[in-house]
Length: 187
Image (cartoon, rainbow, N blue to C red; front, side):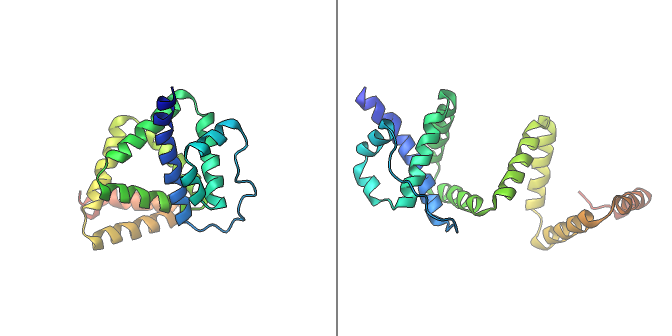
């Protein structure tokens, strides 16, 4: 039973440490949390199983570990399984890919909460699209990524101009493209 518990705790601790490492890399203007000590037997057991690691953490990191552990404890078994699968997938990545993932996580954490919420909503909307539409979007994005930098920049500028147009201006632009299809961007 004890061996099984250590096996189950290892991915949790690694996940917590990953979160702490990512969190430590980002400086936040928030005051440090007041409580960074365990509040129940499960938290004390976690710390007792890893005293050296716990000693090396500063109060903010300890608080983050405890917050993550509490989230873990609150998860349903299938959610925990998914987290463990994700962790195993992460561990199997080549080192360069792991660095890219960690860099993406660091950038994500630096985003304002409002922007993260917006991106999560967009992702949920994308996930609800029919598979053929998602595949088409991925294909078009890959095409965009393969464009020369100048052409990508031009498309981004055009998109910004499009966003600034009124609905009437957009209708007029569409009408002109229908009348002069040779002016439409080539695929």
